[in-house]
Figure 1 (cartoon, rainbow, N blue to C red):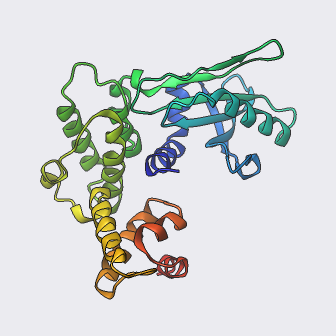
Figure 2 (figure 1 turned 90 degrees about the vertical axis):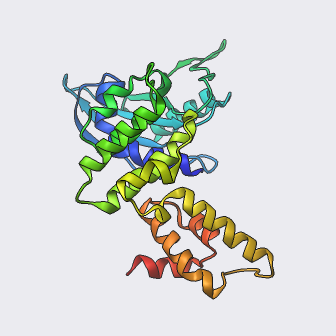
Length: 277
C-alpha cells in the first residue's frame, strides 16, 4: 500500500459523513464504522465500511473503496468485497461506492455483465468534483481533499495558496495538526500535476519544513546511501537522531510500522519504544 493510499483513506475515514452526504447524496442520520479484517481475501480488505441509517430510517452497510490507479479487475474485486460483506453480515443491504482519486483519467468499468451475472456499483471520479465544496468546509481534512478536485479555470498555484491560507487559519493553535495537513497536501498534490515548491510555498507559513514528506524522502535516500557502504541492518550513530525524527512523524501519520522500519532502518522494537514515550 502506497503513502497516497494510506493518507487518502485516513482522510476519508475522518470525513465519512460529509463525503456520503454531499458526494454520494446519502442523507445519513447515524454512522458506525465496521472492522474489515474479517473481509480479508487474499490479503485484501475493504477500505471503509460503516453501518449507516438514512433519514428514511433505512439501514444498510456503506462500503467505500478508494482507488488511486485504474485497474481492469476492479469490478471483480468489488464483487468479492460484496460477497464477503454479505456472508459476514447476512440479511443486511450493502451499498458500494468506488471513489477514484488517481492522476490518470478514469478508465475502469463499473459493472459485470455476463450470461450468468448482472452486477453494478457506484463510481465517483474526484476529477469531476467542484473544489469549492471542499475548500468551503471547516474541516482541515476536507480542505486538503480540494487539491484532488476540478479547479475549473483557476490557476493551480492560486488554489494551493487558498488551501494553505484556510489550513493555517483552522489550525493556528495546533502546529502538529498543520504539519500533518501540509504533509497530506504535498502527497496528494502529486496526483494532479501540481508541483509544489516546498520552500517557496510553505516559507510564509513558518512551518518546520524538515518534518514534511519531501524532506523525509530525502533523508531516507541519504540513509540508503549510507547503508550501501557496508551496513546490512540498522543505521549509523550520526543518523539515528534523524531516523527517530522521521519515524515519529510517520507514526503520527498512521503509517504501518513495517513500512516505517523499512524507511528508517529502525527495528520494530525501537518503534514500539518510541510510541510509549
